[in-house]
Image 1 (cartoon, rainbow, N blue to C red):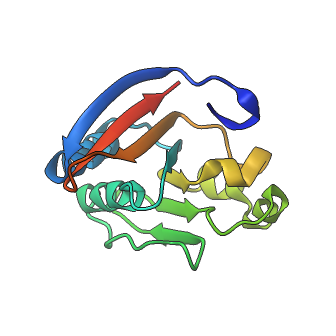
Image 2 (image 1 turned 90 degrees about the horizontal axis):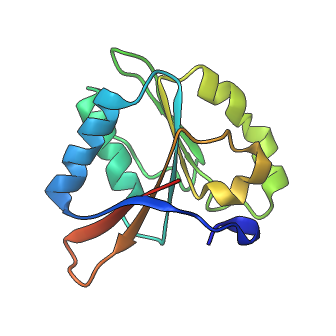
Length: 147
């Protein structure tokens, strides 16, 4: 279930090892169009930041850091900026307005938003919504494409 009782359809569900997560990040970099917004959902430690790190590696950008304390990080790549936003620490959706996520998305080659539900309507609509989850194996994650 998404916010507000909306039922979310899952169009694909895969279990990946950590190398597969890296390959998924490279694929996202190659396939997503300029200006795409990707929502990343999942529990703490599920691999949201690891997926962004894989994208920045594929993009030949600096290594992505967990943005929890800064909320927003931007990484320069030869093909444009990658924005990485972590809304986990937002207490209310109104706090996201100060981040001006729409402007950030427009000036970025790609934008990733972790914990987008905490930003409410301030979060730009996603081109992709990916949900990550732990499995019984420490070195594997479930990756779902949510529609």
